[in-house]
Length: 367
Ligand SMILES: Cc1ncc(COP(=O)(O)O)c(C=O)c1O
Image (cartoon, rainbow, N blue to C red):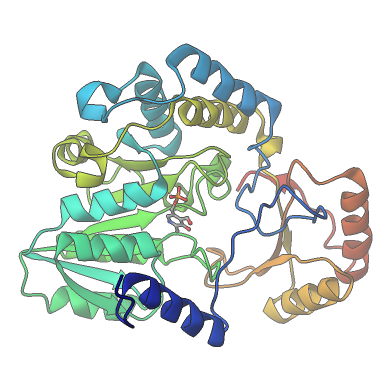
């Protein structure tokens, strides 16, 4: 057998060697093995993935509908639990309708691919999630990448477009940077330029806005014809799956045109049942919104508190303008269901040290 440099095994080996040399090798590790760590890295913001009510919802759905949906939603893979989940999520988020996907990644791929065409300009924030970047490629649309949260650049791109239609892509809370998009300004621009704002609420849905309804709801932007939202069920809702929220016409269009929806097996019943149960927990029990927001005198004080907490072995979040609509800098702490009393006691002790007196009378809030 011929084994030249260009053979498949040789190519794989060369790729691996190059990654290793550059220190870029990624490795998978079973997170449920080895020394248990205090997890401040995962996206199970509300600690619902292991909540008994959510697990029971997943189990009940698997028992009632089976382990898989067994076909594309358009063949025989649409189950009543999908429809129930879509209605419940749309009502919660304040949109007229919703469509459920097997992942948030698929939701993003679908919405851009189906709503853009060759006569569409896609104006994309520089820090948009990879799923949106891939979606632009799938859509074969013209793309203008604007600097992060640069409203003026978005405005210029829309004003100078030669394409008939335009989409503006943003995350409402950016997954890596953790800051918020200027959604009100972006929606205003979209309306003024006959464009559509597609806002990914992956890191906001369930934890930000009124009752966890997301940042679009916080700005009164849900249900507007020029605003379409995407969300994931795999972060705050502790399950798996994605959502597109918009008008019934958008839903119908996606069912007919979104390739990652049409050619994909429907969401697994257990994921749908888990997400529905998580939604009920979020709606019924505002205390489940485990985001502790601590208003601070200013951004410098907030940053100093973060540094001091880190010195005591505690990683805490920090929200500063422009990610706070009211311009108040805040510390942001997320508790997870798996945090023990001892860990919370340690956190309280450290916070007593690093948060100025008079600022501790804060409340647990949902969003
Ligand atoms: C901003 C953003 N959008 C979409 C996704 C994809 O969601 P899912 O993990 O449900 O596919 C992620 C997940 O990493 C994300 O961070």
